[in-house]
Length: 212
Image 1: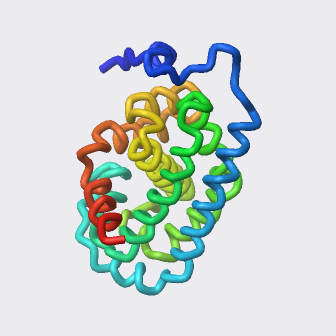
Image 2: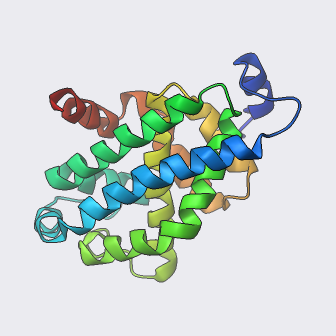
């Protein structure tokens, strides 16, 4: 099916598009805020590798599923991983909330995504390997692991941006399509974001946040 979503029209309708151009200082500020939240959660994850690995090894998965579905299945089967991801989403959402309306949603989301890719993608790939996620999801090539790490990164960012009211899942999908993200990663991430409001990941995260 052809994707006819018009990101520019959507952002204009939501009063989120800045006709006078992008405020790089605000985007850099958002990057730094999200960087801090992301880094602290990654640190927590690295400190819980053994527990996460044990839970991942017991997860039931269907290897016929797409990468996004596999990651979701594994996440939901590993309570400690879900807890850490939930905390990450909550922290990043507060950062998106602070900048809501100050930068265009698509620009802010993609700018932050590229910043995190450059700084943390290697760490995410390592975590996917050492926690057993790569083995469980049958990610056999570096290309598959790279794609999985990017999908995980953008799905976490997407969940945070949507829960903060910073952008809609549709706007995020459109932004990914037009900002240099590969077609394969865009397709997988968009699939994970398309129904994010009713997605089991977000429901699980909300339950965790309610207990916080």
